[in-house]
Image (cartoon, rainbow, N blue to C red; front, side, top):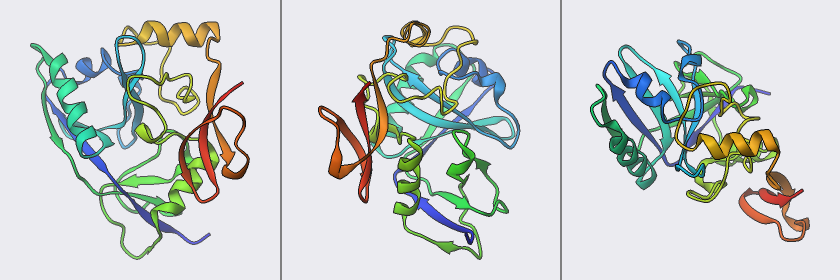
Length: 229
């Protein structure tokens, strides 16, 4: 397959600066910030105190700053406002960009960025448009994602309602069960260790949806649906 790229719609950025930014995130996010490595990204979520999904994002570090690549527009603004409510006296400054270009590249990694931490088959993400590669429609990325069974933020997870267990976030490297406390940890850990989840997102053919399946995102003739197992 020849290398190509696609541009993702509706992406935003949260910028964090200050000496406490990692400790600040560690007490909030589902993953372990200590696993973040230079040149790589960490996938994580922010939950309600009851353990329900609010936002997912990709965390990367720069020179004395940290970026959260997230859903854009009002979703980015909502994440910004929620993080600010937790800031209190921490030495962390937070700002938001509601609309930023994000490109996913397949078959070429000559552009600054990082491999998708959920699954290397999801390509290489960059804020810079690559040179010399064919651009393909967003649907090329979307149908590939659905075939793998990977959720796409609030398209597949309902804010304030969905759990990480339903969306298989552990499979996609988005949650740590070894780190210290974070918002929503109690329910998340209990569902995981007791196997309480009865429904999970699965790839489905649109023409043959199982009974009572809850269809979420779709592309072409396939989609992700919440199915009771």
